[in-house]
Image (tube, rainbow, N blue to C red; front, side):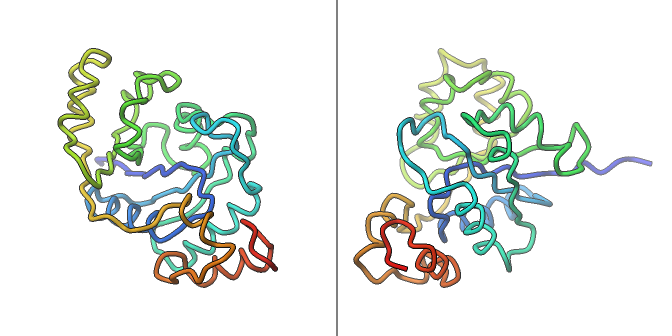
Amino acid sequence: MTRVERRIGLFGGSFDPPHAGHLHVARAARGRFGLERVVFVPAAEPPHKPGRQLESGADRLAMLRLLLADEPGCETSDLELRRGGRSFTIDTVRALPGVLGEPEDCEIYLLIGSDNLAGLPGWREARALLERVQPVVVRREGTLADEIALLAPLLPEELLRKLERGALDLPPVPVSSTELRESLPGAQVDERLIPPAVLEYIRAHGLYGVRA
């Protein structure tokens, strides 16, 4: 009997706070690549954001769970939070199947923004990472081919083609975690950008300078 390969999406990030844009990406990736599961993994200490103070891992995980409460096929994992320290994607990719109870060789689709491409060759064990996963490169603007071409001196041809196959063009959602953090303390937040349950959690716990 032929075994059907399982396709698992890995969506890592700070999620500080999580918002509708994150959900938009997960839904699009599920549909485009036929993913059975999309697993949101909040980072303990993102290597690319040194020195920035995040809200606690417990709060970010709780907000993610609220964001995904009614979203089929999407879930959270506290893998990186439990591991602690700097969160390197290659370590998470290697541990994820076991944590999820999936086959060790399950297909892992790594969701990344095209704005991360330039720094990708500098990620820990970048080649091993790209050999193990199928990247899903979320592009909101610009030309992906031009961005990939800049990596040609740094990555072998087969890995460049992998990046091209993972292109996911999305219409922009006008929201970012940075903008939300800046606007939350003093403005009325559009509930289309951050769901009411997440906003209520932020208010109840006094996060991002919002009064409880």
